[in-house]
Amino acid sequence: MSTSEAQVMARALYDSVMSTTLDSLRTAASKLASGGTSVTPARVDEVLPGASTPVRNFVLLLAQDGQLGALAQVTQAFEQYAAAQNSRLPAEVISATVLDAAQHARVVDQLHASYGDRLELTFSVDPSILGGLVIRIGDQVFDNSARSRLSAVQRSLLSS
Image (cartoon, rainbow, N blue to C red; front, top):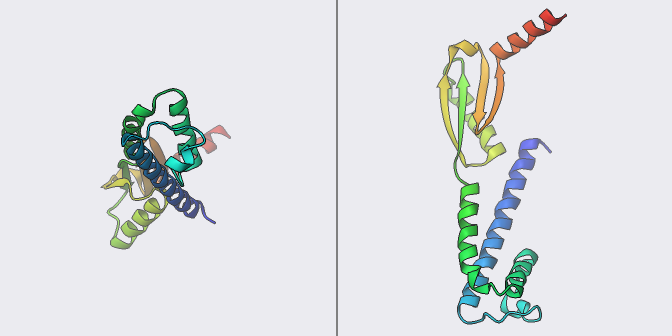
């Protein structure tokens, strides 16, 4: 399995887990807001049937601490946090010349396979890189330009 395939599968798993967790938290907050604030370990499965183990344990912890009233607020904060984690990620692709449609599509497909649809891609041209691509995604830089490869060869020759 390639790294990009593994990343696509990992993203699908992450999205599924997050969705299930959010659904469980919303259900718990809704049931507890409608008067069911007396939750004991014996009753948690009755009040929250099918809740995931982390959600079940979290609700029990809140109950032990007398903080069940805060579940709706915590759920809202969790939703905001999850949305921020899934927010758009700036990405720039720099090439020495304008990419043709097939090259452009291949780069877009490969980046989306690795990072998902949250990338906000921009393309630019910088003839000084001579060839290849420089890709900046968030704070990561992937420099596969001819300029950087030639510089590496030059450094290697000078150090010998």
